[in-house]
Length: 333
Image (cartoon, rainbow, N blue to C red):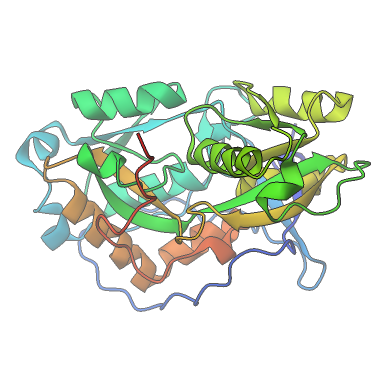
């Protein structure tokens, strides 16, 4: 199969948060080698589409080492010459997923992680694990950091440090032929069979909505949990689930390429607070500052914008990376 035949067309006209374009100035040092330029991924201008490369030959966008930032990396990490990053490869495009070889990790999260490692002058050592183990491995120090669509929360900030790099956008997905046309408030899910990922921030939001409904005397939602997104899609198609609440990027991708589902509502992953996605590392291990500075360098020199465009996520861009900003509020005990 040729590389071109593995490029999947995907519409990118779905509404997302607007973001300011990143600057193009560059101030880097070092002589890190850059691979050949990636094949043009964008479809002809004006057709509302994007081609996604799902092959293992990613030809990623790369960046140069910045000595002043690299010098801030903790000595133990610099000594091993590698940045160990955790990912959950069971995810879906365009975040983190397996390429056509069912081995190579690809997506916007891995691309950004490689860029950060480049700026820090380190090799990226990818670790593929379950969602739950991402937190355990980061907490134990097995992973230096995690790039996996992790939202900043006040509870997580007790244990981890965060350097932000995307806005957190959620979406409600239904089958294409569903009579549901809009979900924008808690009452809209009363009595529905809905699905959400266990242990996620969208689960917290869904449970809060359901609690509001029951307090108001409305029917409780029937919540179903599936470990894999593919199982959610089958449940939607069969009618076992009427709606699914999850991260917007993979849902928008699936709606565009699958044709058998639709988005009926979007909301911030932070609820009333702006949700932010961030690189996560063990609190106080000294890595968050250089990662934050690396991300801001990539935002300023335009590499960050190139990666988001490659995966059709320009509208989830941030104008700066922040360390430990206000996160989703703590849940009531």
